[in-house]
Length: 171
Image (cartoon, rainbow, N blue to C red):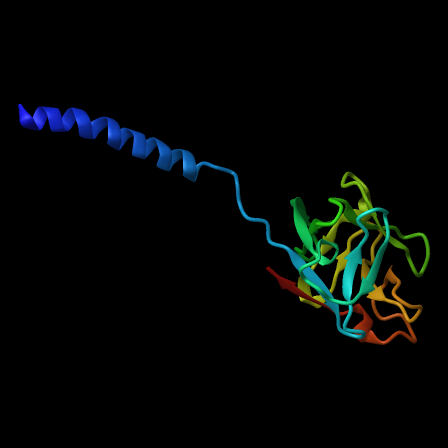
């Protein structure tokens, strides 16, 4: 009789614990990994505005949201080299790093994450490479014109190669 009472008490508690364990393991919540990107040439970090669509390089302070980025959940793999591209999202404003292929030196800005072709980036190899679907990729680099950043083909004449190098660190 005593074992039956113990069984009646133990089974509901065990089922409750099992239910909580299964529910917890099925949760989609996960911690976001935030990245900061420091340029090799000037030692400044990639920064986005909290109030506009501006992007630039500035002093590194990883505690500021303007210097923190995360890789969005959507991705695709480029067929010819198997590089994986994702959207690079600013913690400061929730928008995506964006560029185009209008000139040899392309502007970079923040815009709502969506279907824009200039929002697909890869952080492989200490470079930030944007696949804009026109052949050669555009690589993020700093400029000798103050704090500006641009997307250009890698290795343009007269530009120090270390301007294209971005050292990523995550928290």
